[in-house]
Length: 239
Image (cartoon, rainbow, N blue to C red; front, side, top):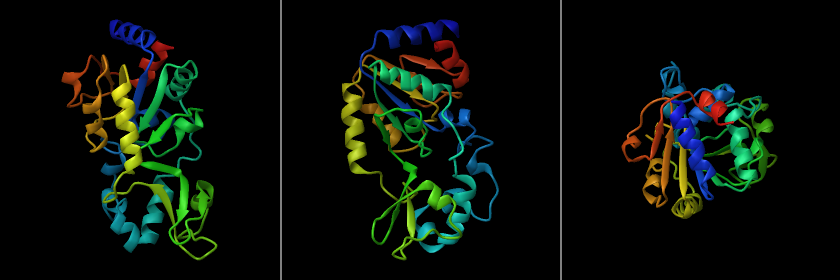
């Protein structure tokens, strides 16, 4: 494993245009549960399937029950950036890391100080009235009683991409263009099972494709370097 860490460090040192894609495994280090692992959100027992609760039709038709779940399970305002967030912030600060493309909605990359972040699935930190489009912060939503309402009377919706909703076209186009220009693409903490995020890999034309994840992925065979190990330990060794 130490040989792989040394190889990773060498690749990073010799790269000038790095793009990083992150998934839920990055946020588990901050105490936020992931979705698909055996202890993840989707394997917990609820009245409704979590994937159904986090869908557009459920939000529209059972808004109160959506918010009961959302406030209980998706509130990460008390969570702080971890060692990997800090490492990526430093990598951006020295000019090597050009963009983070994340599937996470917790906003921890921006909390860590990163400026160049594409949040494919949105963020709990942003919320909008569905009627007048007025902006509300996450504290207003999570501290509201029942369904959060705007001053105009409209229902407030988190700026997160629910099931049955499309990703923002600009985010997809920008991600593709940035990945095409990268010399190194590092994928961290994702099973790469979610479309269309996993399809972005096909646009990479650079030299080094690196996958760091606890478990194997279907894309390991095309990677330059695969590290199946604890992300905290990998980052600690890198630093």
